[in-house]
Image (cartoon, rainbow, N blue to C red; front, side):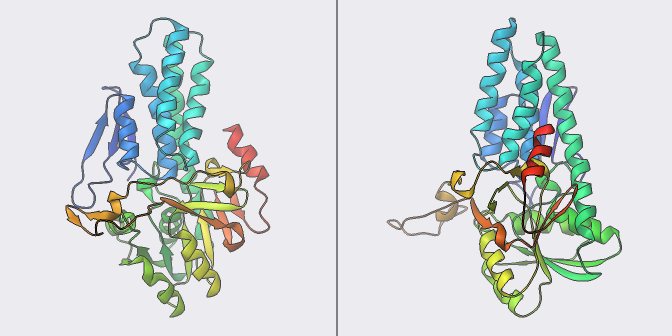
Length: 346
């Protein structure tokens, strides 16, 4: 799936992305000609997944620089910074988005001319995308060694190529293990309410010929109890000093895995680490209640009933068996300081 998720279209000077809200029924691309359209795509989850959002943020700054009509450097920099602020506000929990934005914006601010600002913005954004693809391959190779020669992996939401530039984090581990000749089967939780597991994870793995079975989220504990799951691997949207933030429902799987003595792995790049924050510091995105109230045009919740729709939950690090990164496997007791320094250097 190299380059399918999100890429820069050089000829048109646009950000092109695979519309993840249309899958699996339709495969279509969206072309974002301005930052406002890219911001809409991020809010609608047309592009999603922590590493992919980092790439989107990076390309978004490059797009703002390319589209700015300001002719004076100070005004140009203010224009790009305003666009960056808009992008940063779209998804408050996933740290990669702001990381990708800040990385490119810092290069633009150091530019001595508008032309240089545009050039370095695009070059840095492309570097972010290329590095993400390489990082995911390294995460996959590191994590593959943890899997038995024959195993069933349970995963939640989508942490595959659709959530990154290529290969994936959690699914990257699966892909690398299969490439090594291991017999790996995947159980994909449907991931309510938008079904990223059923729609996206199953679509990816089916295309790769990797056996995948979709279950409702509430069936995971039963499968663990019956011995049908050998390990759980998930991605992450932010790893704070004391907790992993990932798609809501992850905490439930971690508790069940711990109870049944099943390894619970988190696969994530250093750009997802936020060692300066604790769980209490993080804003958990609350999405619109309509995602739960309706299935298509059919009403699923009666009028008068309240709805809560948090996008993420926090899994305490005490429940995490290991964190798989591009530079190796982290195990308890976790010291995220070194990872945080790597994040800052990039």
